Length: 300
Image (cartoon, rainbow, N blue to C red):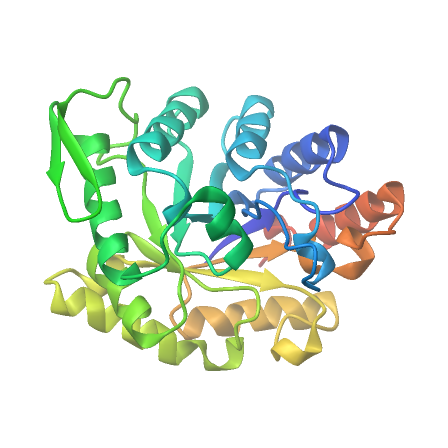
């Protein structure tokens, strides 16, 4: 089981100091990965959780963390693919991969905010077909000397994108999603699947089975598909990852028996860390305490 940590990208603690210190501390404490997420804007008339109201750009935040670290992997969970062309995302991801020495994981979703679709001019129909084409376009841009893709929604004319990612096979692509078709699609075309913040983790084995079924259908080894769990802590309604440090560690170990390959603790959903009125110093102190007490170095 690989253990990661969510970067400070939401709320009052999402500033240069805490972001840098959390990144450095997580690497020092043996965490395998650091994660961000995307929220472009919030409809002024919509009431959403505080986590969504003030959020740093996910790739810029990862670039900042990359400059301060050397080993830890850097992932976005997730970037909403309808909002930006695959060529533009490929260039950003490849650049980050080169500058970080091959440490980037690219998580993609299809988006859900009507305001964001309107603001970006994106289309929300035929999401499954768009996702398949998007991943195919990214693959040729990441891997091929001469990239070439023609689809219904996206086209990459015969062209060269350089520099390409330094990771063999290109930047790993992970897909979000919670409906059965999306889960199977992640197994079919992506390197892995990422659970959402509101996921009922007590039932995650059902989702893992669908992801792996998709991989088998595509003739892939289902055991090679990554299952990444966003670990929202101290939310008892989620069923797991609440209570003592030992209880949380036991929950993580149990998730491993359900097919999860990676968990990252994300405190951006913790109202005592990323709430709108939380003192940033207190938020960072709480986060650092959690980071240290759940350190992978403390695992037997």
